[in-house]
Length: 260
Ligand code: OAD
Image (cartoon, rainbow, N blue to C red; front, side):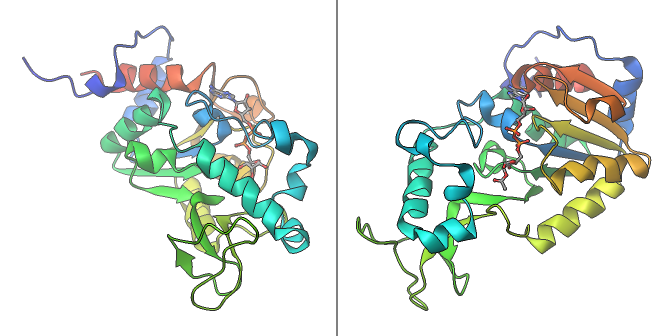
């Protein structure tokens, strides 16, 4: 018997009714771009940025834990918050939505996955062409000379320092008020402008500049698709909107599009 090429998506049933013209656009597209946000990791058990602030951390505003000003004011507080979050995602695994995007990448000639998530789950699942617009919480670099490091001491009193220049270490994520990494952003804009099909998945679509990518795609004639638990400001502008959990809709979509 021929092995099922989509076997690792599990035995999901196709409950969604995907319009035939949408499936045709997708299966004939040479260039597909997917932008993901926190909603895609929700079914892996990860809370969104604001929801993640529980217990001890609930007393702080996000800007007090994730901004250059916060780091300058109280570097140890910021370091500890990220150390806590790194610890919290250690056992977290990709969900069927992540794996469906891996299957999609295998079937599309030019596939670009742009993510606002810092959890690294898309690469963990197996996606290859991933642009991490907001960085990656697992990477640590020097706040001064930007040298990356994979090991640091466990001093409980102070923020660990860089072996090269002695500067303080920080997570390689984009903080409030910081610019996005230039190379990734340029690649994301270029991919969006030339996409035949553009997906916005699990993102509220309100944080710039990521939110504007859908409009860049739409203005150049892409078919724009939204998959989200609920309607967003982008919904009235898209060609197709599917509301529900991405971990359920994406595997069904991949099966519906490529089951033969
Ligand atoms: P948000 O928390 O703003 O939005 C998450 C979206 O996911 C919401 O629209 C939910 O309806 C949707 N959602 C939740 N569960 C879902 C599920 N199972 N399936 C599908 N959709 C689901 O997160 P982002 O849009 O990613 O920036 O936020 C963007 C940026 O704002 C973050 O990267 C972060 C934050 O401030 C930085 O840290 C720089």
